[in-house]
Length: 141
Image (tube, rainbow, N blue to C red; front, side, top):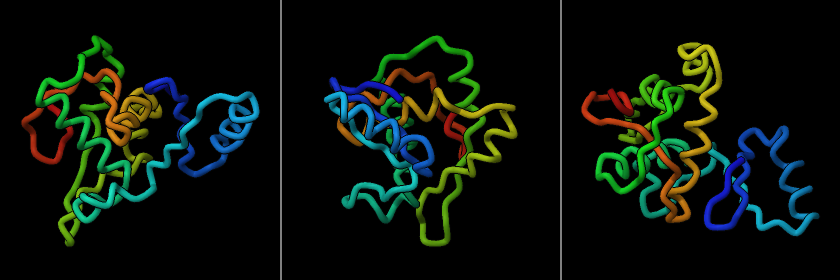
């Protein structure tokens, strides 16, 4: 869960816990936005990305590369970004590697990275990131 432009953003991917949180926050009159990484990428670029997760990760990568976002000195976030891999499908769509494999590489869930990748869809900064560019098929390296 994070906050962007006065909204509380809740990850509802898989919907196990997130939807209950969304419901409760709305009952309390909070401005809440659901973010489902498995959802579709924005229509203008949808064919280039397998899902919203791939689109948002690559948007944040671009923002960092272009120096459009602030950098945060966070070793855990950097580790998560460096451990993230992607492939290009036969249809040419970017697909972020399975989260299960990422958790296995890290020994934990990439929660900091996920939380910071929910902003670009709304035109926000996408949080603070610490990525570098250059290594193919790796978000940073």
